[in-house]
Amino acid sequence: MASSSSFRMTFSVVFLIIIGMASAELSSSYYNTSCPNALSTIKSAVNSAVAKESRMGASLLRLHFHDCFVNGCDASILLDDTSTFTGEKTANPNNNSARGFDVVDTIKSDVESICPGVVSCADILAVAARDSVVALGGPSWTVLLGRRDATTASLSAANSDIPSPSLNLSGLISAFSKKGLSTKEMVTLAGAHTIGQARCTNFRSRIYNETNIDTSYATSLKSNCPRNGSDNNLSPLDTTSSTSFDYAYYKNLVNKKGLLHSDQQLYNGGSTDSQVSGYSSSSSTFLSDFKSAIVKMGNISVLTGTSGEIRTNCRKINS
Ligand code: HEM
Ligand SMILES: *[C@@H]1O[C@H](CO)[C@@H](O)[C@H](O)[C@H]1NC(C)=O
Ligand SMILES: *[C@@H]1O[C@H](CO)[C@@H](O)[C@H](O)[C@H]1NC(C)=O
Ligand SMILES: *[C@@H]1O[C@H](CO)[C@@H](O)[C@H](O)[C@H]1NC(C)=O
Ligand SMILES: *[C@@H]1O[C@H](CO)[C@@H](O)[C@H](O)[C@H]1NC(C)=O
Ligand SMILES: *[C@@H]1O[C@H](CO)[C@@H](O)[C@H](O)[C@H]1NC(C)=O
Ligand SMILES: *[C@@H]1O[C@H](CO)[C@@H](O)[C@H](O)[C@H]1NC(C)=O
Image (cartoon, rainbow, N blue to C red; front, side):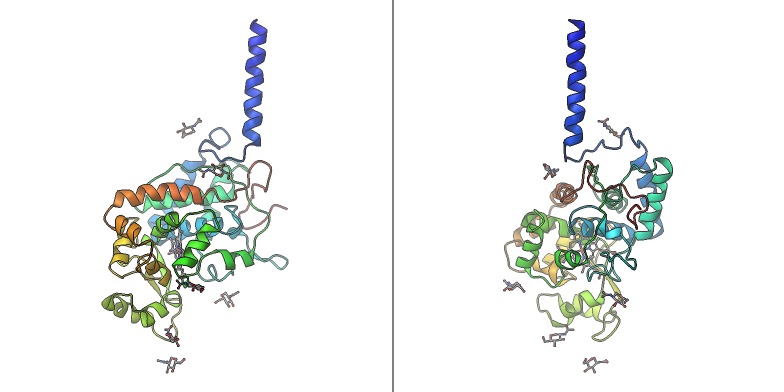
């Protein structure tokens, strides 16, 4: 009797382990035994980077987005170009724009020193995005873990799948739908533009040519973004509080103070106006929706099990 019950017990444990390994599901406890200090190590490094430069929190959040929208959350955005390999860093949405790669290198070397070969670069991006939002006063959420790193990248997918700021509402809806995200989730995730900066080249036509913009807001942006030149001059995406992760982005939209064409598309007489006005008067609704939507974004086409690899250096495929 005793031996048959212990057999059943052993059998169930083995069965559960096999099921666990075969599963493509991410899990919040993925590193609990293999690297128990992984999350605290990442958080410390993010906190010091954001303390040094608050914009870095925005830049790290955006890296996770640009990673996930290009063939899934697989750290493909982190691969450097070489003479024989073209990555995603020079794609239009990333070139002279995506930043935070040195901070990711620091985080990776910190986690490699405690648990070599265990923590993926893709998971680092997902955790750093959450820690960045928290460091800038936003909500926290449980990050699901167990992503593995790609051995490929795609310049063409980066150019086609990361949404452009010139898109109209239907273009934005399609870009997110293509990634399994709803219109509602798109409007929620765009609230990430409550932090960070954009370059003049991405909002020039909006401030000189569009009519659904507050006149004094448009005027105030022109000195730093002339008609010709100064393409890389920066202005805050959230004109009121670009280093606080809050709901001011939606209040700006209701006041016609979206910086990008794409931002104002979310409140321009279309089907998403009601969601924007709802968020503009309810911080808690936005913050709680954001937590679910970003967990879903972080789950796009992840590599698990034996797919991909755990890169040693986030910039290079293991040799
Ligand atoms: C809805 C479609 C979206 C479009 C069209 C879009 C477009 C842009 C553009 C053009 C910039 C400025 C880049 C530059 O001028 O160098 C930007 C910045 C940023 N985006 Fe988005 N974005 C979108 C959605 C998102 C999402 C879903 C997230 C994250 C969840 C995000 C996070 C950010 C952040 C944090 C910045 C500031 C980065 C920094 O200061 O370094 N964006 N985005
Ligand atoms: C994993 O670790 C976290 C943080 O220490 C803890 O909250 C959680 O309960 C652990 N989960 C499991 C399944 O052990
Ligand atoms: C990326 O930016 C650099 C520096 O501005 C520029 O020389 C290069 O042509 C750009 N690359 C692409 C592919 O646009
Ligand atoms: C949105 O943009 C697409 C592609 O540029 C265009 O075909 C479509 O007519 C536009 N839709 C609206 C409602 O303006
Ligand atoms: C404004 O629109 C006109 C006409 O389409 C165009 O020629 C001009 O380049 C635009 N200006 C800016 C700053 O985008
Ligand atoms: C800006 O460029 C336009 C045409 O490209 C030109 O007509 C205008 O004189 C330029 N303005 C300045 C201030 O250089
Ligand atoms: C993540 O994706 C997997 C596979 O598509 C799915 O089974 C799971 O429910 C998703 N989890 C979340 C939190 O979205």
